[in-house]
Image 1 (cartoon, one colour):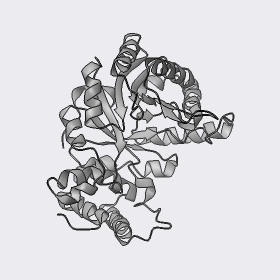
Image 2 (cartoon, helix red, strand yellow):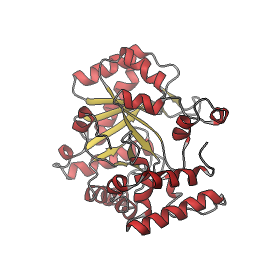
Image 3 (cartoon, helix red, strand yellow):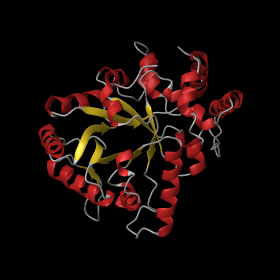
Amino acid sequence: MSLMPIERREVSNSRLVLGCMSFGGGWNRNPISKEDIISAERTIDAALSIGISMFDHADIYKMGKAEEVFGQILKGRTQLREKIVIQTKCGLRFGNETTPRYYDFSKNHILNAVDGSLKRLGTEYIDILLLHRPDPLMEVEEVAAAFGHLKQTGKVRHFGVSNMNKSQIGLLKQEVQVPLIANQIELSLGHLDWIEEGIFVNQKQGSRVNFPEELIAYCRKEQIQIQAWSPLAKGLFSGNLKGIESEHIRATANLVQSLAEEKGTTREAIVLAWLMRHPANIQPVIGTINPERILACKDAPRQASLLTREEWYSLFVSARGKEMP
């Protein structure tokens, strides 16, 4: 299995990332409660206990409260900051009575968003800043100017993108003078188009695949870390089958359970191992705040190294619900 490029290893050697989207209570502007902080502390402690040292945020998560809760916890644990990697995202703006929700990659918004995240997180720098979703009105010169300023002032150490295709990344790379080290996209055993895109070359079935052409290969070639959001497929193969009637999904959940029992591990570890077995060295961003489910992910890196080609394909073919072309 290939290793992370040197620059990415220097940013974080954490094979798993904890997504902090659920920190802070509801999607509203209500004050943060003591219970919100206690819940987040338990989640962070569970993550740290299994070797997770990278935490994924966005300025919009819980209307900013996710970052604020994390910042309050850091305030009480001053030695923790230098031991972890904090990643956050910007570029999404909430709407109001007269304006819809929209995307904004303007220089002023990026700079203001970073200042807001720094204040909420209570830190002097962000390790990795990602552009959250592609802005159709993106002017690459403005993004380049914002990134250059943030790098020069030390507010952000590394940069990347989220939910972008290779052409969008390539356009940015023409102007941005700092490396783009990550692309966070949805990948899982329940979201298979990223694999389907590669196996349907020159076949009509490929017209039904909804995934950017050559994106995985492009990121590997350009040494851009692929991060997977929703890698556990919302628990679809590890116990959350309520209301699911699809026979092949249920069969895949049974196969995951069988492999977990055979290998003496958890269903979560098998589901993540399937992703991490891929030579693109995918970095899952797990979104649960349940400490028990986080602990259940501990064995995923080891299981990824043990998963055979036959087992990987058995899971893939079962999840896709039909034989390989």
